[in-house]
Length: 386
Length: 249
Image 1 (tube, chains in turn brown, cyan):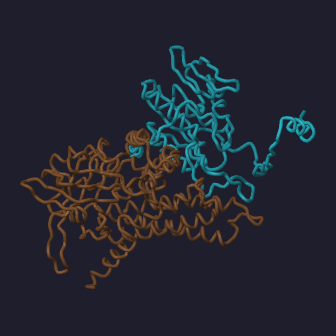
Image 2 (cartoon, chains in turn yellow, green; image 1 turned 180 degrees about the vertical axis):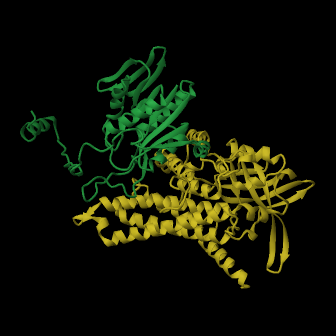
Image 3 (tube, rainbow over the protein chains, first blue to last red; image 1 turned 180 degrees about the horizontal axis):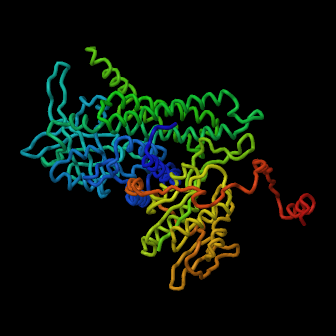
């Protein structure tokens, strides 16, 4: 598949792919079997990423990033998507929501995050508040100029390595014609803040080693300058910055789908049964044809959504389409690739069973496929007054 | 001292090379191409010597089709200063390449020329040696160590029996081996800068070289598949098989 990339963009793709193949692939089995990333390995990946100037590459140059545009960053994420998430996490891409930092928050959070001195995590989901953030129970009340936070969060990825967490907390409620709606405020919470504890979350079928954590707040006192953005401005912060995570999921799905496809293609060209290469059976070759068609479509949909952001066009619907299609495509591709490999595909000697397991979460996190369809439908119908 | 580094665009080392069905060569359509890995080591060596202050400018040269410019850009993104592209479509033999490089060396007057010890496509391992002979310069081939000194350079060579140290005069042609260094990634700042670095274009005719091949390729075929081996239970059985079946003892 080709998309008119500049020579620089081609080289970004080359470099990141080579990095993933050389620095990530060799350690994937270790992470799969141990369930965690050794601290020295994490540090080594981080140091090498910094050495080649890619750490925080999603941030503008004025805060020390590389100033990649959305399309270029999508290409970086796509190539990183080939590798284990537990490991590529250290190819640091701090949450771009940190651009909302104001005043001395820039020195305390934004700049050290881009420099790789402090790692961040984002906490929104709660046991009772997944797609429906109105059900958020974690809340903060004012105490003088401070805030007192109580409640818990779960499924918080990357928090085990985080020096601070960006937490969305209910700070009130408004009555609307469609029922009560929580007011939400975003807080920056340092690891070690009294009243804030992190503990191991659940064992997930997907992305072993990329841990999800449970955060608990028990009368956790936060000064007013820990608020990111405006008080009760959580929705604004989300709408301004959180589109990026959905696009990231889509692009990473494309990268992993292509890695999986390459394995299936090579296997079909070499494996012999009934006296011929299995790729000569249409039952296999037609599967490959469908796989590559869907992967190319996902790739173009994703890059095109990123490009729309770069040229200032509305992209909410397109990002939702990309996330929906690319993640559903990854599920089909990993399933078909495993089928082509037959019994061997199920064994952990090959990474296919892992790709197949890892694919499952992509249709759930950062907005389920159903939520993406809801967004797409709403964006289409609302302008028509429906 | 200026360094000239010769780089070649070859099939990426990760790609499984397949013979074309008409047996005229290997399949290049839709195949990922990359810089010859030994040439990457050559570029890296030049960059390290520049960082150490021994080299002042690094010029990357590639001879080949238009897309060879991508390979030059990779060298520039690693840290080389400028490029020269000799555009030529079609097959090239080591002697023609060495003659073109000689013409470029005479024009650029580098103090050192780096090549990979061989390209992973043809595996000829001839160009650096021919270039050295044409120039009348010393050669240090299969270098796994390069140390400049007052008398020239001390080269550690990888030879069949182990390592060999030779002292050579400069200027010289070096061909580098796998263990000389570990090439760096193209860094993001250098990728962005690479576009601004100049690549001069020239042709074999401009350099006064006739690139026509002297050899004709009749047919390209895959090597015969190796038969599976057998496991033997004892040394006695092994010796018996070697004597009675393989008839080698």
